[in-house]
Image (tube, rainbow, N blue to C red; front, side, top):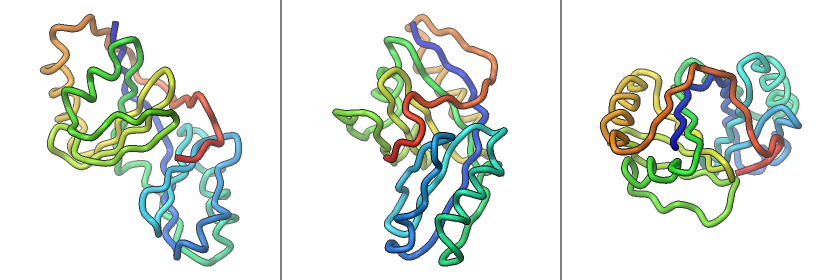
Amino acid sequence: MLRLRPTDVAIVACLARPESLGGVRPGPIGVRLAIAPDEVWLVGRLDQRQALMDAARSGLAGRGLVVDQTDGWWVVTASGEDRLEVIRRLMLAPIPAAAPALVQGAITGVPGKVVYESGRLHLFVPAPVGHHLMERLAAVTGDLAVQLESPAPLAFDTPGASC
């Protein structure tokens, strides 16, 4: 079975020189994603957006830019035994050997990110093409037992983790 769920998330981007990003941590309310040498995202539940913003500002201590990216991304969580089949069908990137992990690349032809956890994965695509991701998911999973779930808040297996 494959379970797909649109996911409500808060995304806070921190942009600074690499040496300034070391102290940026979400604490137990989210995860830290290393997007680029000069960019880190703090990702967590939508209702903790302000706490993530505060953690980002505190971690940067005025040495960089903090930007709320929440409205710029569409996130779908895939869980169940067939979750990796979604990635095999939508993305040409390798599946990481260990979790948690972040993989960036084209998901169904658009730029995206995938956060791998032991029991689920979270697919991030730019919000304007979120409908495209949902259409492609429907098209490539027709032979699988799929359960589409109602939107829900983001949950991580390992809050506080870094990828």
